[in-house]
Length: 129
Image (cartoon, rainbow, N blue to C red; front, side, top):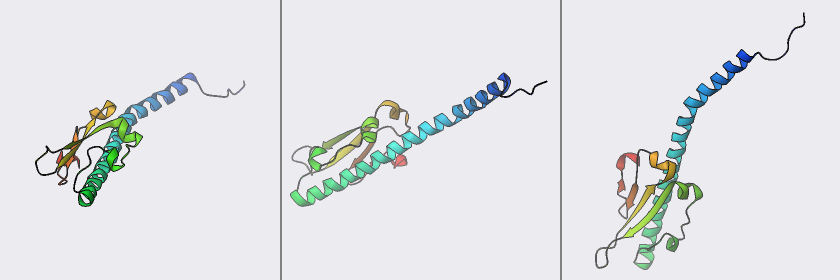
């Protein structure tokens, strides 16, 4: 009798089942890591904007009205995950700004929701910074 070469159908099915179980456990964890990484990248960019705004206030005594006025371009990872909005205080009041990052797409599942930081570096939600 000849010895057969290769795998049996049952061995292949067991291997596929093991791979499926590993993928079912690993994929959600991977996606959570991706969301957290995008949040941290966005927070880093937001703090860079705050720094640039403060430097602009020292140099020209006014805050920029848009991110492009500061020379900021959004990296693709940030642009695909968040919508950034720069809001200035009303005219005739003490100069101030708030930068908000609203999640979009898959990032909306991230538990922190909308991130914001002010000219005084007040960050919210505090637990996510």
